[in-house]
Image (cartoon, rainbow, N blue to C red; front, side, top):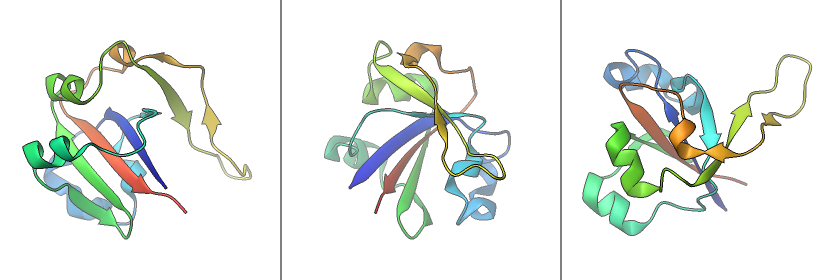
Length: 115
């Protein structure tokens, strides 16, 4: 099973991806469940293989316009809020259109193998 998340990257992440190995979600300012099960083959053929972030996740870095090549700006996405200390699960916010993603210079598309 797979899931795809997207969001604006924290400053300087793009130049320091090695520092985030084994912490793939820490690259994001905030991230969203895209509802995409798996990245299409056309994405990886067009942009090359993503950076492996741990044993089961790959990060693709792109500009906002490239993000819209993968998903329509009208697509509904849901922001995820990580679980805080003492909590067991993350919180999923109500769906919003992808065009409402926060502004950022660079965006990440994280494909995660889930078990």
